[in-house]
Image (tube, rainbow over all chains, first blue to last red; front, side):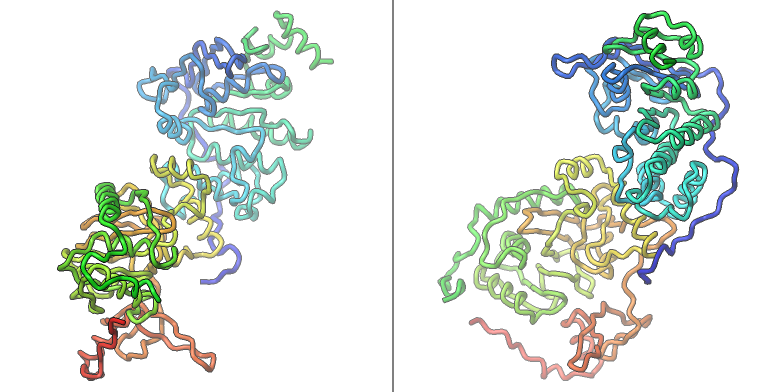
Length: 281
Length: 302
């Protein structure tokens, strides 16, 4: 055995994407949220949030800090326990199973197979001490992958697709820049082709040019993979670029929803008008 | 004045009281019922320091009866100071016979080795364990560790094996190789070498692991699957030494093989020898290389 540098082969990959999904067909919604409420003690997180995400659709949730958009997302992800409500997924059980009533271990299994999350802070979604490939291996081994060669191959494919240099595959993520960490998070999230991707402020905190690059990548990935997505952001540019339909949240409530371009052109609710006005500045 | 001197040489002068033994036996029963699960127990103060076999000692004291024959060895060596002292303590405390021959023993307490001889269904192996938690290296939070075991969520372990392979080209874990027991719990086979892992799989005998400092007991019941964690395309390998034992009988890749250890010499060189000294001696006697009369039972009750 030699304690030298990486001796495991980095497989070469074809340029075609393998992050693919079957073409969309009349299927039940990827995600249905009904009357979702969350209170932190007496404090309102979000209340009576309702929406659906069709398979392959990207839905935006926009609002200022504290509007409850991240709370709603974390209740769906299972990071927080919802106070009340009902959430079903087309791919879970018979499509009518309320995932909020599942046991904690079943919820965690859901996070491996059916739901992937990309967080604003990469340290929430990644183990920074582990290599980029190892982070992807985490999701794949949790999903039952046990073949080292195939895990390496899949990780290389994903990193290539998310434009992380392959010679950095075996370096700890801690040594990566912010933009590259987000790319690794995306690669990990899509590793085992989950039907639903939750993106929580995926480009907030990146500088403008890097954010634009990551945003382009996310848009392409959403299109290619046909993954259903919920994009949470305070930034209209992100929502405009990634989604066709969106909700506006304010003080824990959904105040308006509609097609993204219409909503930006002609906001109805006074808060939406203020929000759009501020963004158009 | 030693602890041994303080013990009157009468029956029931045990270093462990009967109710403590009963509690340990209850933990053992739980451990056997749930293979690989680490059962907490109230580890007692022993006349040996924690980390020197206090866990194994309490377990042996709790299970031996008057008809048992006990072998204690350490790193494959019966003559080690720690092993000899534990053996004498058990003999004095419980009034049992002791031996160095694993074929004659009913209870074999060990650190670092499983005997080279194939053990039988009427024998029990007691392993002294320093670190019972196989996930200690990948997770520190005790609550999270409990959750991971409860849900069989071992992906962090797999990631550490992946990282090891990427960095070193091989899985470098030497002793305490993580194994899945009965398809359910991952255990640390601590601290035996990889060489001794395959004999635990579907073994006829009962293996009991005990960590005195960490206060945990776990078990591999007879005829239980013990699978070393490894990737499908990366076979589990045991240690291979190209050297030949100084006994001259054990050759690499030959019919007669045993786990070899390196013994440094005065001049800076080293020789290799069978780790299991009792086994090595018997092989030499059988081959006519050693006169059996030259082996003397030197152990005396002080």
